[in-house]
Length: 164
Length: 135
Image (cartoon, rainbow over all chains, first blue to last red; front, side):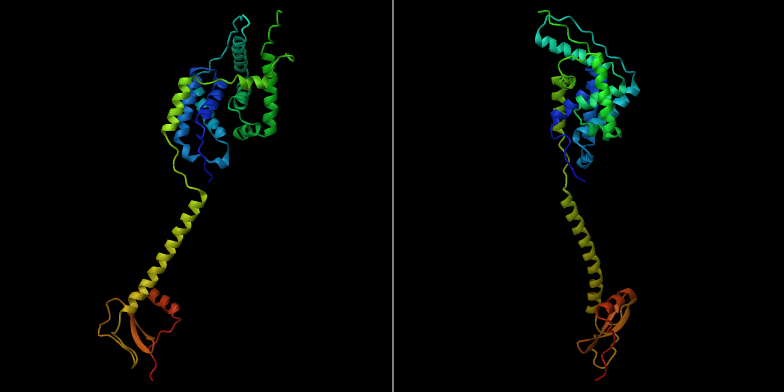
């Protein structure tokens, strides 16, 4: 059995798990709880990680998925809706607004689409890794991702026209 | 549809990836560093260890047979069979079988506890188990 430490880059590992959890649950305490629980569980089973069976990120995200499933079983999921405040046009503030708008849009996807977006753009997994994790064909995942992005495009409001 | 929405949505999803609070990130990274990875053995090390273990087992098993034969050889005398046989003055140990063997022109008596051991020695010495012939 090939062995490699899944925590060779601890900071990147935490960032990916959090981004995945936050895309699924919303940026906040729930994502933090899931991230902490995932890291704790991964540390416990660190010795059993087999690099021959997949990338460390995919292994960690697999644990995060199971942690989130347990989270859903414990409590009902609160729908995340972000309201977009008015902006004076500060570029940095506009960037923050973009994030809220996008996060709100992701929160409005159905659970399946949201999970795909979280795996692809939060955990940064490839379509193939996602397919292995979900037990599906790569082509199926790619098609589903394409549909999720199309749905997101419909949900994200177009930027206001420049008054100048 | 917002076909003219800029920038590219995929790029935006990655750039806007939610980030953990600094405190959370630092806390978890510290926890990870505090629990070092378990010692790992390479596949080669495992194979070598397995081979050495098997070799040791085979060696011990062989030693067991040899030691039975060598302890039997070290016993002399008792029931000499043959006129040229050298025999010691020791009597046959209880519970053991005796076999007269012609070795280097003289008959020696060997004692074995089990028939199996006799068979092994017979195989080793090619079944030459008989007292020395009369001159």
